[in-house]
Image 1 (cartoon, rainbow over the protein chains, first blue to last red):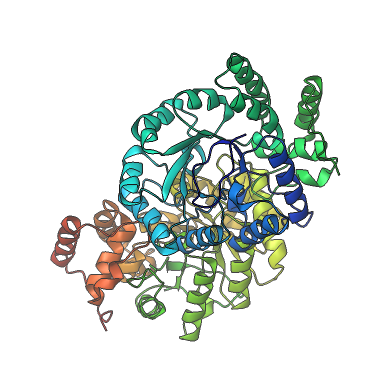
Image 2 (cartoon, rainbow over the protein chains, first blue to last red):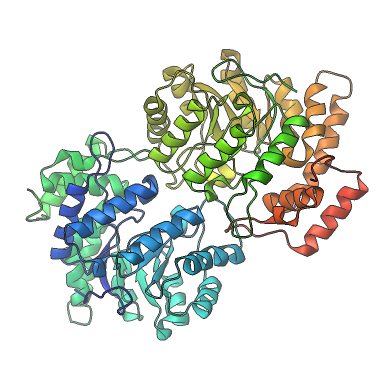
Length: 313
Length: 313
């Protein structure tokens, strides 16, 4: 596990998990379940957490709900220095508000989507979007990790934009999460920026070994929600003789999850492991994993000896 | 111009404009300019207004900003019965809050995007999204116009989903805006649902005549912001001998705008016509129309005798 660092205190690395957001039957966020999973993850291999990512259904949450959930984590003793909350929204004032809140609370950094409603927008417009957030937050402690996830957001963050942002805000623009699913893109970013202290996380543990070997610092991965211990073993052992075997091992579980709707599948696994069926609840437009896919998934995991010991209450 | 109707009071039709949202130099919404343009539009051919559409940069506004702008319109005497505000967001609580606010204020209806962050979602999930909003708002006066704009939202609303929503909420699901840009899709919707009182607006005046001839009720169009009078002449004359000429006429101006970034171009035109350069301001990720495109656009409009009389202060 990589060392934790306080806000503005240094560089992050290791395994980060975009934590699933639990909902009650009324679809309200459930801070109690949320804190429990976060604590489990930090105790089982996660260097840090990236709440309010894509896997967290963050864009299905109101801004106030995100703030309340972050405050609930901190109130329960989850260290801010291990948190990298997602704060990028379509609306500038929302991104400013969430980013300022995270920085004021001492979070290690923020993971920032570009505004994603309008498609085919210019780098000028995206630059202006990120720059306005940084300027309006106006806090030297701010560390932004740019969140590139074109398969979902459609709006991407290319090397020219990164270069321009780095030039203008060398301290604030700390790194990125590359969820393009294309390691050639990650390599481009590493080749261009890693030597200057720009920290690249991959968005899937499938690319973790490759990323670390090429100068990246870790991964921020959906499947961390259930498989953080094994992914952290890979992180810890990446320079060792077992690295390729450890990579194969995490790929196996990833493959099981990836062939399903990922968020619903992960919630089904957590629900099972926590002995808490309510965990399976998702907000629309997502739907829970259908029973005919849930059963085989859980059976396959059982056959592999998969478990999340200590998660059940 | 189609007759206005109060909330729940009947059916809408005619030319509706997704009103541009003006911003100050600090990027804060400017209610004064907004009210002025809304009033001009209602006095110059618009049956109603659809504030907070795509053209309005609605998703670049915080929820509270949208509420405040709607309240500003009503406070200045813009009739609620001529308003069809956009209320569909990624987050269910935001859509519920905006929709409830619009209904409580007596708006004629709401224009509702599907939640648009996750791509490739199921009709089950989208159904559940719309159904939750309708159930949670829980007001018989609610009239939802489904907003299908796949080129931007990526997440679309197909006939099977409309059918299911109509079956469950025959009163609340009042119609749709089809911004697919594909009249074959509009025709499918008309053929399937128009006879049962489902009111279809096209998202561009290019399809207005075709839509009216096939049983549709009007258009909700970006270019209404500058060309509502001419589009309303087409609406008023669609059964007459000049209909095709009137359609050609509005197509001409549409063509000028469509070859440019539409929102920035419309704001440039309004800024010029209002004698108020501040109108050109857009929020990121959009950028203002570059000068080398603004000049030729305004020259071309001048050559055509285009004007918005009375808009300047």
